[in-house]
Amino acid sequence: MNSIHNGVPADRLTVAWRKSRHSNPNGNCVEVAPLADGGVAVRNSRYPEGPALVYTSAEIRAFILGAKDGEFDDMIN
Image (tube, rainbow, N blue to C red; front, side, top):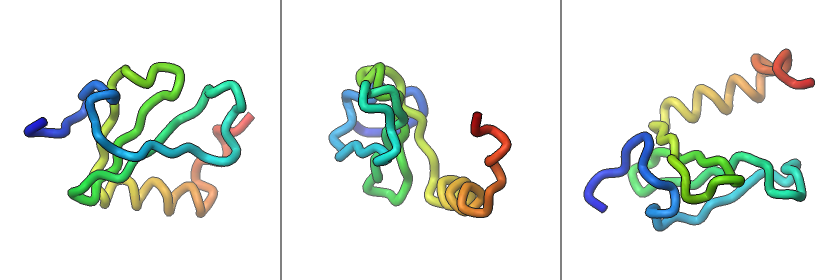
């Protein structure tokens, strides 16, 4: 594959997908994978062949730091 871009079929990426230890045991979770360029791919584990969202290292860093700071806590039921 010449280019990794948003919407690429996730099953076409040769990456090591991983999920949170807090994930649902039925497989309903978000999985992430580091990319060679420092970015991160994200997919829905229910649809492993579905599209992957691709984020730059700066974007994923901002999100993770925001999550650690509690910026998204209001979204938890």
